[in-house]
Amino acid sequence: MDRLGGELARLCKVVGTEPETPVELLAGLLGSHGARPAAAPPVWPSDVADDHSPVEFSLAFNDNEPPALRILGEALAATPGVRANMSAAEDFLEAHAGRFGLSMRRLDMVRDLFDSHQPQGAYALWLSLVFRNGRRPEFKVYFNPEVRGAEHAPELVGEALHRLGLEDAYRAMLAHAVRPGELGVRDRLTFFALDLYDEPQARVKVYLSHFDAEAHDVARAASMVDGVDPEMVSGFCAAAGNTRRFDARPLVGSYTITGDADRPVGYSVYVPIRSYVEDDLQARSRVVELLTRHRFDTALFDRALGALTARPLGDGVGLIPHVSLRLGPPRPGITVYLSAEAYGVLPPRTAGVRAA
Ligand code: TRP
Image (cartoon, rainbow, N blue to C red):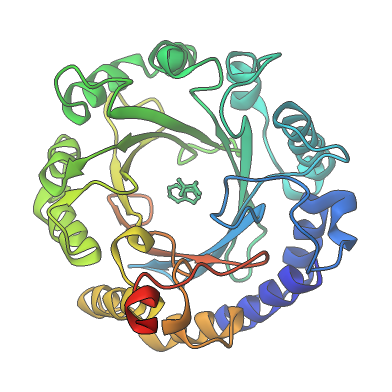
């Protein structure tokens, strides 16, 4: 916790947010494990981050408002496990619902679908916390659609959207985002997210991971959303990944649905940039290029990197796991994901060459 808390406090400073509440919430997510020394091995092999840290930070640059700081986290139970951590997450939400004005209404409508006695996969429920200057934190939950096995994910998400009155949007999304015959094979429903507040702009997000895909595959997925330029999506992927085929980690796309619309209002693409660079120096320069193209503050991004690590960027890879482009309302922009590197740093891919 010392390390993670220090990183978070420094990131808060970079974006001009008071650190107190964020650091307190981070401690709540880690529970009794927050007191462990930084050097100890992970208590739970969380899939939130490559090094098994249960948290990942991100910096969301917004077209129309100041940048926001976010945490993606897995709540850790005293004895961690997929199901135990889901309960810990729900306890955490309960404990903070009153103070932060959370609404569990839609979560309660679907939670049974994603709760299994023998959950499959790496997680059942993750949380994200968003800190915007001068506002109270926003909470979001991520369910694992593959928790009953990958083959049941389409029906699970279908039923969840049906209960939320959004099944028309679902059919339209699958029709555009899934390559023929690839649903549950190379195009997998991997996250299902809900904003925990009860306002018209509260979002439902449906994520698809596209294995072995090309930029035009996500461009096609994006093309069904009004006002979204598919070429922005493919151009972004090409610049971030510098590859034709994304055959290492998958491209991920998400549809945003708000209110009771029968079509998604927004699309985001997440490029797992860490799998397509030699080292973090290269990842940083690609991100700087993308931020510049979109007129965002690259100095802020560099300060955020500095808040996390003092190591030379060329000495590792994974500090910047994903970079994403968010298109459409409510908040278009670019998000840069940042690893805490609490448990370790992967060597750069050029290491062997250099040593030789
Ligand atoms: N670590 C996981 C992955 O890379 C989950 C994850 C964390 C993720 N942050 C993300 C997935 C951002 C997509 C986008 O798949």
